[in-house]
Length: 217
Image (cartoon, rainbow, N blue to C red; front, side):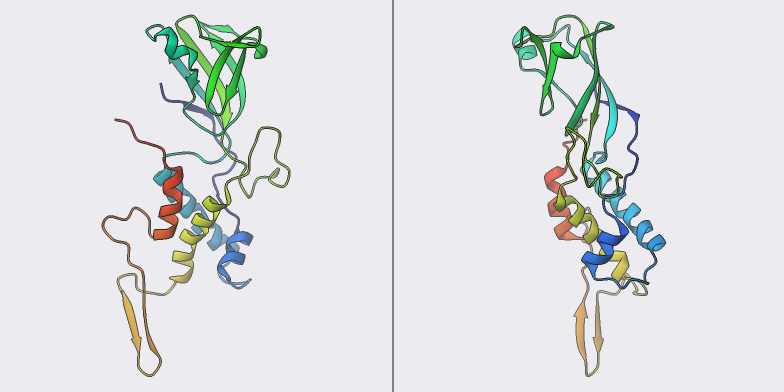
């Protein structure tokens, strides 16, 4: 069963106005922070949709029906849907809460412990509540992330800033115009998103593709 969100992230912005303004070389007064944050929201949403994931720290609930799984498979651990995993809030087997010292998580795999050794889960239903995701650039604890939490990878933030650059530098330009010729000065061409492109910036799309989750029917 896919994980369901029970507590959404505090923020979904994958960069800050100050970082975007600095990286893009935008002047201090134009665009305004309000406009820039609007583009950040739009670009962050594009990245989230493309990658099929929530980037900020989120609390999930996931349920596993293990009754029909073979024992060897259960020894391999239960694969949590979201990552990176920050902490496990609770694990219950058939409604009974387990003590925190009877399980552990390694990357996104949850293991049952017995006397410190990994064992297979027994029972029918395993329910897990956990926190997964990254500390985002605008989060209050970004400068000093809590134990178990990691900062958003820098290449993700850079990709989002590249997406922000599209509308930031395209203000006042007709999006249907592919090139401009100015007599006596020269000409310039603009990138136009192709039919096969999912995002309006090819480098950003290539970067975010590394974090894209597989889609299952």
